[in-house]
Length: 216
Image (cartoon, rainbow, N blue to C red; front, side, top):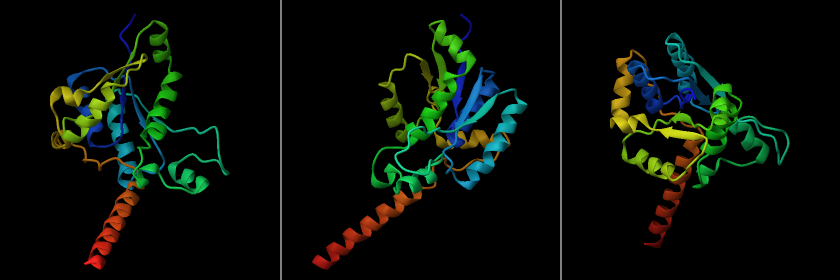
């Protein structure tokens, strides 16, 4: 069996961008970089995506933009982005209400669906191997929690690797690596609807404070 194919999950943020830059500098193989577009990233993120894709292309690193393809609709009209999903279902992302992340539906699932049709991956699986998937969790306390959670999620199709943790890099080190490569440091990659979560928490806090003041 040939070397298992290597896919990098790119969020267009600081951590995963620095991971790809450093791996390319070290000459480590990256066969494909996947960015899952939920249709609601920040404007600065969308401006950075073509810039870095050009940087990767110049170094022979292939990349693809994938999107969630809904098939079963509870309401009409059909949707293809988080914003359209909200309008169709008259709701907000679950994270706004303190629920789970939207990443599985809008980030992970589209990448896995694309990989399922990618010939190198299919050939690897047919031979009993596992595709190597690079994840940009850094060595910070926050990403350590995410990393520990990921460790219990076994997948017979993938071998997950976390280069930034191998190197002991935190977010500041990642930002410095991007700047050293002559690239602008991108903003934190996240759906702009997360701002609603912060507003919701602020309103709740102010409301509770008002109740306490009234009770005094």
